[in-house]
Length: 99
Image (cartoon, rainbow, N blue to C red; front, side, top):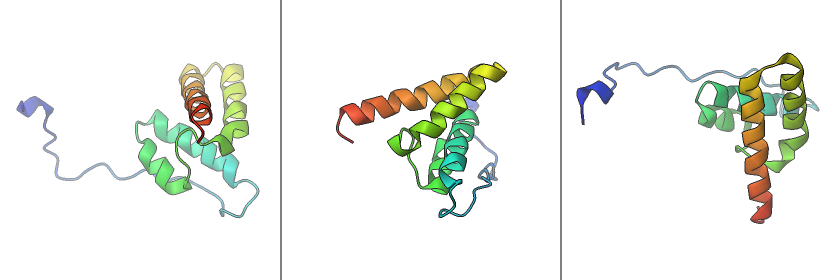
């Protein structure tokens, strides 16, 4: 492999931290949806999945992702529009395959 593609930095980037309420909080799912979108935005969906316990495309978060999509439309945030649509698209695929 070309050295141009080898990361030589021995210190990997620190994992992002997500400000999440207690999982029993009524606000947890909303915060989890935002964390998943933020994680995808920085190219680290796995960290958000690990922090929230939800996987990308989990149908339980659809109402919150739709709210993020609406907000992104109002604010003209094209990146979040793209990510929210991807999430919803993955959800439709998951539902269509039975889970």
